Image (cartoon, rainbow, N blue to C red):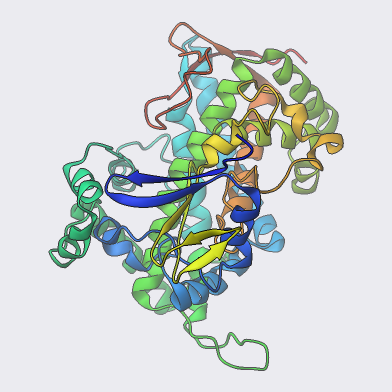
Amino acid sequence: SACYRWVRIYDGRQPVLCTMDKSMIKTVLIKECHNIFTNRRNFAFLNGEMFDAVSVAEDDAWRRIRSVLSPSFTSGRLKEMFGIMKQHSANLLNGMKKQADKDQTIEVKEFFGPYSMDVVTSTAFSVDIDSLNNPSDPFVSNVKKMTKFDMFNPLLLLFVLFPFIGPILEKMKFSFFPSAVTDFFYASLAKIKSGRDTGNSTSRVDFLQLMIDSQKGNDTKTGGEPTKGLTDHEILSQAMIFIFAGYETSSSTMSFLAYNLATNPHTMTKLQEEIDTVFPNKAPIQYEALMQMDYLDCVLNESLRLYPVMLRLERVAKKMVEINGIVIPKDCIVLVPTWTLHRDPEIWSDPEEFMPERFSKENKESIDPYTYMPFGAGPRNCIGMRFALMMIKLAMVEILQSFTFSVCDETEVRGSPEQTEYDINKHQYLFQHGPHLF
């Protein structure tokens, strides 16, 4: 209820303060982010070789790494990457056309996954895989192995039940990620980086090159103080997390968006009308026009409300603090249940319904930013948010220029509010595609 917006729970054996209080959320994620709630829960051994990736790095190390990475995601950089994305969206569309011409249903994750992987690897390292047509490529097979998440993995269950053994498992070099997979990626990325170091640089500026440039010590803070660049291992870890996070989250978001359009054909028709107005006669997609499509934003935002990228946000208190009369002890984990916030009937009318108009220009100003956080919030939000949104928008617009989504017999249609939990890897929705009627 409105009177009780927080509760103390146990996550396994770990005490946690779970809060849906907007004021507390703002304090934890933004106001006191740098002083008290800088870090996420450290799963130690689960991170393996990615212990210094931006998503798990802590305190000063995180600030330094984040400051080096941020220029990679400015509007100017994203615009430079747009042309590269279009090459891969064309491959995606051609692949879907071939399948549709056979009058067969399409398992969309099997198309969105390769598209996401190709975009990430090409914009990050200038490596073109074409994983849709080369599914046996070692890069492809290893990414799939890496993103298979088993909630009943014995190591994970052991850590949840006995969190104090985390440091022991870490010293024993246990890791949630298969060592063969991480070894493959670190070796591959090290080889690419070595080529750059010896002068075999790519003609386009990519994510990897920006990180390499940080090592030259030319970056300066205000006042001319040199900024420490990334170490070789840090560079490889950022590249790894970019592949790991970018592939799975983007392809899953696209799959859920396709599902929402297939089960809400009136919304899809309205979106196609906007597409045909902005890009008549299947005109090529232009960056500026794509970024200004209002109804596309509404549809994507509503899909992310129902299926957020981050189901929960966590921060660890570095010292005891009192917020709104509630004492939070040192090392306490504060959990923000994004999934629950996004479906709270006290915040959203008909929360289980897919209603893009919630995010129209007339309505979105009334949405509290601390009740809608699909990519997190504050200084530790998802650094690749704008990149992912651009990639998703481009693919969806090009698909809807030529096809419509519809459910088929194999589609698992969710009907009741009780069906609120989902497994990203399980729900790889199947659809039939028909020709675009406009």
